[in-house]
Length: 109
Image (tube, rainbow, N blue to C red; front, side, top):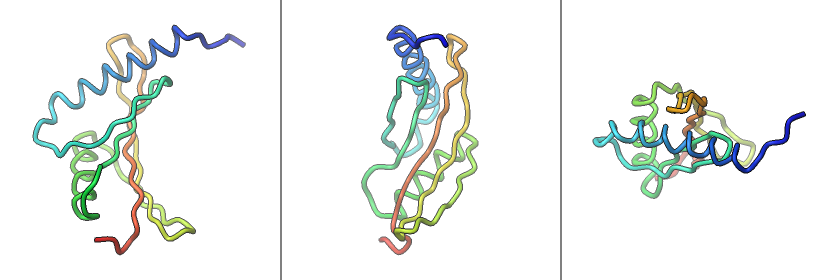
């Protein structure tokens, strides 16, 4: 087994940042969302504050922009999770997972 080095983690994080730059560069008309950048070549976008309707609109707009089909998963705690992902390739050739995520109460607003 090959050990994962700090250099590997930095390279994967830089790949994720490169993809984030590319997907946000041509999304100037979309509502801003919060992005998390992982050292494992992953990005996660989640709508910030606002009503459930506003957050759903933002999530749907980004899903359309990225070609992501969102799944709806009701949880045992009553919350509903919306989730979907896609892959993009960074300039360095590394595959980056781009996911969208949101948990809300079904009757929130």
